[in-house]
Image (cartoon, rainbow, N blue to C red; front, top):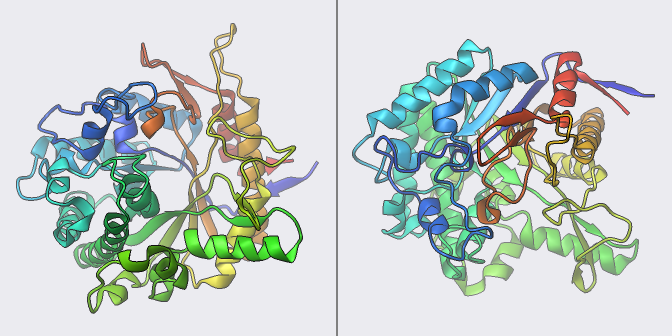
Length: 440
């Protein structure tokens, strides 16, 4: 048996997102978001559910923080609902919305849990979408103003700020593929949105630092390493091309100051309008980068491979391949001059139920997490500066277009009663945090 210890100051946490857990979608002055509109549109969500109630975290946050304390979490990554604090995206402030995040942050601090705040986890105010959403450059400036508002209110207690979660999903799943809000399928819209998301990141980073000089500012990217199906030169070349076309659209401008060649090839005449100074603003130095990892893309000369014989797959249809995480971390560490890294999301959706003994036995999720923790520790031994790990997710929650059908949580959610039950994986994670080590 091998024991892998983590550095004494390694930050163990869990993550969530406002629309997926808060509920209270139209309470206390909150404005409509694009996800409110999208989920209320028939046929958009697989099980017809909405985030109207979700986990009711808005009313039950104290119960959830008590569960975080039970697990021993050192940090909690959560997002703010932009339309809860600015119902129209700009202008009139909703004091009741700000008061909620005040209470949440105070309760986290009282529990000795470090707040890691994400400003945008996909729920754009619908009022801004009605004016063009992320295709409108004005939205980027409105985002910076929103960032300033939150720092002014919470900056005395929140030191770690993430601008965006997974901007590629925002730009392309929402505006090119139509799978997420706002449900558009237009390449020109998608590529312009991608640029304005990066611009908004740059503007907000500058704004946060001006308001709070000791703040740590970062962004979170979801990366799927492209790996060849075989050892053939053709598959290796195809995997390299796949990575450059689909995975570095945000990495390159953020850490090298330019768009990759693959972006120009993919976008063609749909490349966005980029103004002088934009790329310098986007590429400003960051204090950390968050990496969300779930799986990999296996590629051969014909394209992406749908399934790998002998591999395990999650309920999302994603291959379980923990060693790919180590390889990804080493690769980006070698190819980019990165700030410290946090694993900001990693987890697995498996179908699990409450057993006759009243517990939730989820051995596949537990093993998934164990293997990914192990590969992260090995990457750290390879020289990658990983500072912390946020499991996705704290609780089962509204899984976007999948509704309530996919369960990622360390804590099971009964959506009828809203009863929370810590799963075996949660109890195991609590022991990992307590001992700061894993055994394989």
